[in-house]
Length: 322
Image (cartoon, rainbow, N blue to C red; front, side, top):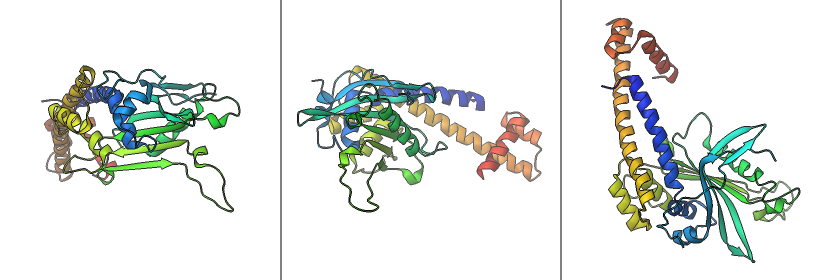
């Protein structure tokens, strides 16, 4: 039987490996193309294959930071490569984006329109701050880091719109199966505005909260991403659905990453079940201690942990109201 420490270390290691695989999966061009089609206004009218073939630039994975001072087809066997995923600032430090790339819309009046895209995997939807707030910060950094490359001095009209898209595979129940967008809007407090919408529509944060994939889902983004990150579906089930419904062919690279991610998710789920059983044991023993049925020493010995560790658990439960 795994000890609590062994379980914790194993879960931590597998979560890290799972996160690495997940980032590689969403950085795959065919996957990124479908995310753009289903989560952005600008690409909604285009086919995913067209987006993959014509609109996606270089992509970087988990090496990009959010702080700064001043055809391929859907079976393309490559990821978005190396637009620097790091945005560093002497004053503010360094924050790494999971995936970052530039996407270009077809030319309008002879000029192509470029967007900065950030894709983030967010396991917890309540990590101690609002995910939307962090998304706004990431979008702002993608805009400010354009200074000196996209625009200089007062050339603010050249600023490229930024999208920060957050995928939450395990949101709390109340948020499941929802897609929320945050954007800049105009409000006329007095008089009439004559500012073009495109002049202030410069950042969007999109949060995709996945569900349990039980029953039919009539939203393409939730169904597609829910399939990718389901912990209930096997690799073969995902492969079949992604191919038949969304036209994604399994390249060697995508197949490897998705297969490993499936294996890790099943392992994490199994360990999570065992951890839940252990937590139930701790709570039962502590209730017996409170009722005077056994001593804290006996309870700790039964649980296979030290007295201090069991008391720490008791404090955690009290703080959380359990």
